[in-house]
Amino acid sequence: MQGKVTRVSGPIIRACGLAGAGLFDLVEVGENKIIGEIVRLEGDEAIIQVYEDNTGLQIGGSAVSTGRPLSVLLGPGLMGTIYDGIQRPLERLYEQDGTFMKPGGRGHPLDENKKWRFVPNPELTAKISAGEKVAASGGLVLGTVKETESITCKIMVPPNINSGTITEIKNEGDYSIFNSIAKTSNGEEITIAQWWPVRKPRPVSSRLSPDQPLITGERVIDVFFPLSRGGTAAIPGGFGTGKTMTQHAIAKWCDADVIIYIGCGERGNEMTDVLTEFPKLQDPRSGRSLMERTLLIANTSNMPVAAREVSIYTGVTLAEYYRDMGYHIAIMADSTSRWAEALRELSGRMEEMPAEEGFPAYLPTRLAEFYERAGKTTTLNGSTGSITIIGAVSPPGGDFSEPVTQHTKRFIRCFWALDRDLANARHYPAISWIDSYSEYAEEVLDWWQNVNPGWSKSRRKSMELLKQEQRLAEIVRLIGPDSLPDEQKLILLTAQIIKDGFLQQNSFDEVDMYCVPEKQVKLLEIIMEFHERAHRCIELGATMLQITKTGLKEIISRLKSTIKNDDLDSLNAVESNMRYTLEEMENSYRSRGAA
Image (tube, rainbow, N blue to C red; front, side, top):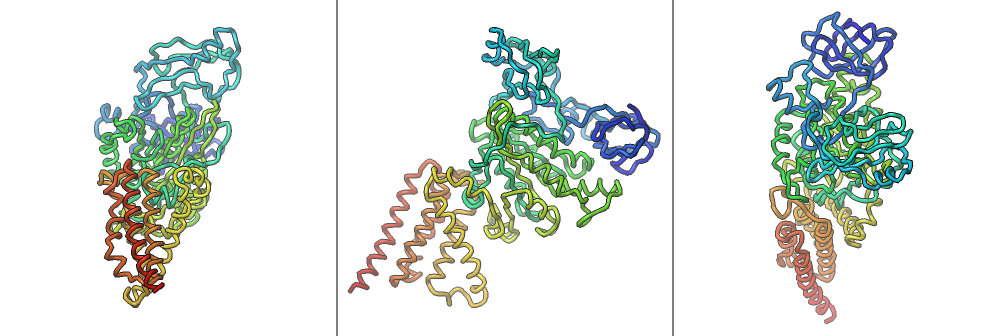
């Protein structure tokens, strides 16, 4: 179906003659066949948002509807690839067009000529050979392809095929992505790679409770503000507070099977750092390149704004594909504020009624549509997979009351607020223990109790102590610390140990860059036991000067970087030494009181 361009307003184009087209159909515009999407239909006229630079596009140019929605190609070969927001492979486009992408530039998302070793599902082939009827239901695993050393790609019946039976599965061999590897009784041929619309969530069998944490190795996250596998989290913070670096650390160390990093409207230099650093990172689990289980989507701030808007849907659709195989996926969206700004610009050009700060009235709906695609699920083939979404938010001036941050808080259950004062003090991760929260703490309680039964108690007491320290800090600013009684001085001392020896982590320290769950809880237990024993000594008459002279503060604060993750015996030895030192002081004052 072909129409004609009647109006051009930046990335928004009006075209007549497309009355028979459907909403969200893919459209090719102009001589260069620029990719666009129909976002509104008004009688004979369609409003199209294009995902490429349309400089030079003229009134009267062609607008051809393809009759299908914007879709991504799903199959082996995705891992390690760098795409833009509409799944064009940037490396191939660079080889084809050079530094600057040409309008209408094309690059196939997956290599059409590469042969993949397909291994059929032996159980399925045995049933078909025996004459059994196997329903061609969505999610049925037909076989596997070794995509990388870290990822085995399951070739499944597409979710939109739910009728007929499987009549044939090809033998083990080398096939390209569009070769047929199975046939159904309805005459449908199933290929290794399949298309799927980005705005349509892939179906699942059921949703499960997010009762297992996503372990990141960051103590402030795992212990204080845990995130579940299949959960949603936001990292809001002003410029320079460490949003991107925190996401980089989580991407490298978290126990997800697949990492999808969406650079949505970020500065070019930040995306350059990602594109150059990620291929060099070593996967701590396999010792191989992290890119073997990582997929990057790059949409910098100088790229077409409409592609920025669709990039997060592209990313989450790719995540759903691997989730359906039974993998656990972590999505890093950096940043949803730039995505919301793209919505605002497109909405303004379509002359829609603005809401708060010029954002469209449907901003909360779009945010909900994105975050609700996270979750821990039972897939159509009965396996368990999850998608965890971690979205960075860049509020102007660090103002958390602006619309994107406030609406995001409605749809996420984990909020890691970055604090500029902590970042300026070089305390990283700069996650505020006062403003942050997690609603997953109760759901992951059983898991942590199996690691260490003292997790909940130590976490609760330490957070209470940090809140007391915040209140005392106001008094200290007015009258100084010397006027406080020793009990309150001890609160300040212990809070400082928690901040320096537990919450702060050095990503360049070979020991401290990652902390196993057992060590995390043990460190906090030692700190809280020090506080309790020191408090008893002060109650019996000891002074803060005597407590500090023991040198325990310095020893405990350095444990995070002096004792390795697998050397918990050394932590127990330090704990025993601390107990002995403070018990001696306690017994000494008890004997004086008895005398």
